Amino acid sequence: MTGYDEERIATLLRLLPPAPVGWVRAAQELPAARTEIAALVTRAEADAAFRARVVADLEAALEAEGIEATPSVLAALRLRLDSD
Amino acid sequence: MLSDAELVARCRTGDADAWNELVERFSRYVYAIATQAFRLPQHDAEDVFQEVFSRVYEHLDRLRNDEAIRPWIAQLTRRLCIDRLRSAGREGPADTELFEPADVDEPLAKLDEAMTVRACMDAVGEACREILDRFFARDESYRVIGDALGLPAGTIASRISRCLAKLKVELEGRSEGAAPSGVR
Image (cartoon, rainbow over all chains, first blue to last red; front, side, top):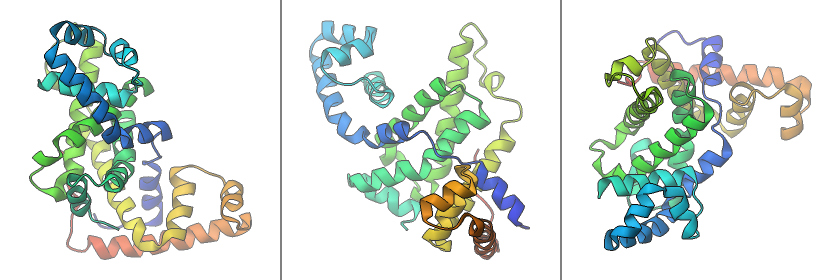
């Protein structure tokens, strides 16, 4: 990485626009959402019928539990269920 | 500013502020990899974005070298983008390389270098950092920047020029004897 000039620096700076604010906020809120997810997973582990419902339709299962089905929550739940 | 390794160490202790900072620091990188290098549509890019940070949060303790958080995140994002392209192809072959854009290495290397430049922005001061970010990364006009920062629009161009020069000096100082980290 040699020969930086202002034009090259400017080009590189342009490559990293901010991610949408809502995406960033959802990812930042992930640790708090995990408490709710953990409770849901615990219940799914103890109740096979509930687990089947959750696996069949993650969004519906979350909404039924009063948890907002944001992409970050869905991703975290999917990850937990896959690893069990 | 905390180093990447220090930030990772704090996240492991459950420090919420550190997690917020980690997401903030790498959000542009993940976003750019998904939308520029892999050209995912916004909806798919959002899913990949959230999946990346879910996995980072879940598996942070598996990272053996805390300094390597950036290449780890890049690799994770790359893999999840390929998974997304593969699932969109559904009936297609399972060979990973067939779902990766042929020219993906070059944009990934450029994004890695762009992250190195951004990491240097802290060294040029908050005022320069903000004006450079607003103009180049956020694509704001002189008028918008002037209004936001309470500066005459006519002075913005010269400030940008001075800040770029400062950043150049900083980058050249850091790059002596150091190469950017690889993405692969």
